[in-house]
Length: 171
Image 1: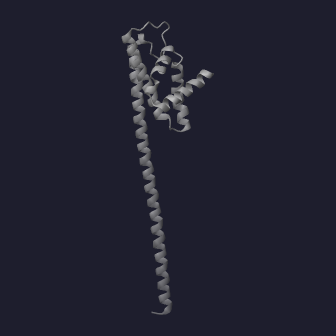
Image 2: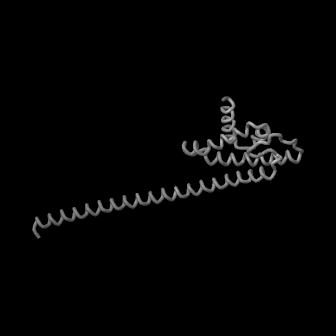
Image 3: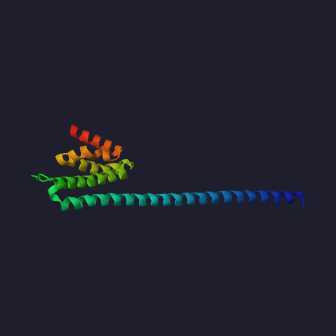
């Protein structure tokens, strides 16, 4: 074997080695990116699943409230206030408080679902709940129950609702 042949073999061997290392690095990078993409998809799917579950829990709370409000219209706890609500006896007052607490729990569930969302989600979804809350707080019975029972709920939820209520009343 001549020096030229040995040199060519060494050069070709180095070139093949370089190509092999580059190919391994390239395919390693491709695999890493694929793995990251799959991981991101899995995280997104898990996040979507959790969001759907939270939405369903909130929906169940709200549906429970609506069923009670429809079943006991004399308690004046429905979306439309009665023009001349009757005087409630002690049992009815206790029932009205129960309906109010279910209503509040549905709002708190919505708050916990949307409080950390993007500004778009907060504006598109949460602000509707805020308007709903503010409209109910115009009513004496809801305002009275809110003042009596708000300390049973998350302090951050209460603080936000109080803030929204103060801004609404200042208008």
